[in-house]
Length: 290
Image (cartoon, rainbow, N blue to C red; front, side):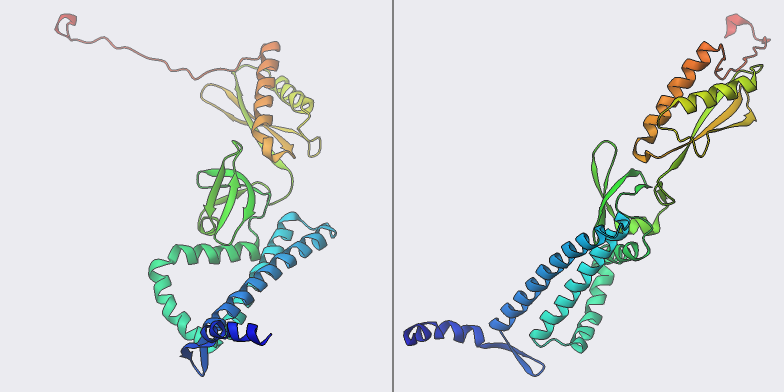
């Protein structure tokens, strides 16, 4: 045993030899290793807490978006606490951190603006929840389902199964359309025009029959037909229906258009196309000179 102690003394001496002094505390290699181990321990605890919260919240029938926000917020709090404890173990107290933070803010202002902006936006999203996991959103040119919300970015999967990483700041600073925000159903608009002289009541009945025949259209709220306007070339109608399959709303719209076209053909209802009259005026210029 004594021989083993004597053999590791050089290594212990290297680990415990002060590298520099921070405040009134000597900082050694052992101090750095202990700080790293403390931080890793907090990371491990944060994952365990996240799993326990996941199991607990699932039994409470909580909205998946709220559940994900709570889990991530708890994880970030534990990780931040771990950073403070790890830094404190090597002699960096909160006062020292405040001074260092003041210096770092200058660097953040110049070089880390986007990272900081996206991180703060991620915290705002988790707290205010304008979007949540599972929502179908449109931001900029991106439209799809939110798969996960991270600290600096949000993962969106499109209907083409393409994964797009969207910076969190876009959801705070830009116009966002959230189809899932107000609930699990969405109203669709099918615009169609018929020729002047058509029986408008007949058109209304055909549109309502088509809507009621589709399995994806809700019976409550009932489908509604609106006579929108007298257009340049047609009488314009708007078929309004409610659906619950938000992800396949474009497919339902296509099905309804196919069915309307077929029903109009069978009922001899004409869907006109824009027409333009061209008036030619004779010229005094001789044709031979043109």
